Image (cartoon, rainbow, N blue to C red):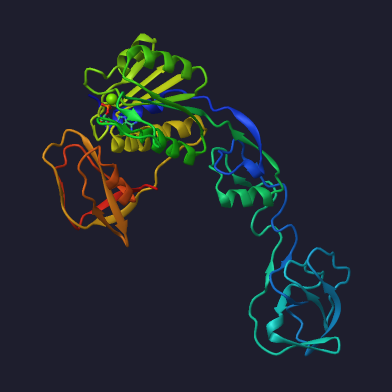
Length: 390
Ligand code: AMP
Ligand code: MG
């Protein structure tokens, strides 16, 4: 059995080829940028007033300033400010020649075409040309995930169409003769297929395309036929269930029969031990143990980083350091364990967790903690890293 780190290394060494395509800015949220974005303009593009007020020269100590022009946002000032003069200017307006300060309206009085400063305003109130970004600066790098702030940046750079990486097609196939789709009645011995839906939700949050491939019973012929078919139109296939030691766990054998290389079939993690990773030329298959918590954890720690790499993004989970509230103890330490916790205000509390079928526990959790191999206890009061989950 290989370790978590060895499995991650194997996954990281598989070559992937993200494909570029064009996308409109309206459709770019959650996509991965496939180009560096250089600014073609200075931002702001001109010296711009940050306030509604009066543009003056800071050296000018006049008592009154004659208002020689009114500058609204979007117009070009035509007059130069001289001693004893000012221009009334609105926020976003271009600062006129001769002025280097905007006195905010709140500290002034205006009378008969003249402005008087009646209070202190120590600020310059001008956003200088190129203060945020200079023409030629790289503002966003290739590989960046486009979130809401990036959409704003892209638009402010004047881009309406950009290069992004194609969204991989991910097929989700649940194996198990006991499975029934939600919305149908449940007979004795049956359970609802939850993995297809939780996996689809995890994939969809990443911005990849989901192909639901439904449920197949534990039959070699059925799984093989469905898998063969699904592979034709997928960049990555996730098979849930059928990877453990039971008489009806056929997935590894089927992958072998279909000519796949099985890179690993067991990893020293808990939950998620019988995770299978197999490739055949461009085909990629993950076999995920059917227990719902295992499914969730295996996706988070193995599939998510791999799928992001296929999308051109180097995903690194963000860890939050918190203090553990109560002791955690375990007897066997041959595997790296993942446990659900609830964290808030810098403290994390382990949640009651009855093993990998206990999905309910995850719904109360907002983080996972990792207990490394060889570690029997983590004492309350220790600092630990939490991997946030949503
Ligand atoms: P398996 O990995 O096929 O041995 O399944 C392990 C456990 O997970 C069994 O209790 C299954 O009934 C359950 N399970 C398998 N597939 C699913 C699924 N798609 N949704 C919910 N539970 C499942
Ligand atoms: Mg099964």
